[in-house]
Length: 100
Image (cartoon, rainbow, N blue to C red):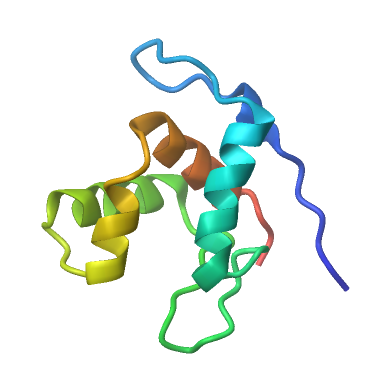
């Protein structure tokens, strides 16, 4: 049975007064993540972490760490360098709100 998750993150106002993301913008980013982490945040490969239900601040920190190189991972460094701070915040909210 496929879980349905509301896209509450579309109205997300990130700290610092940045703009909210629209549905299409966040869906595009989620689709990129889903290639490895699964559409519902549950990865099919045991080597890839599940994102569903993770704490939002943890996810933000890890994406920032991948982007800065503080946490080394070739694929995640590439992916994180191509998303904005607003997208990171929206992704964290999205995956944190998926029941696991």
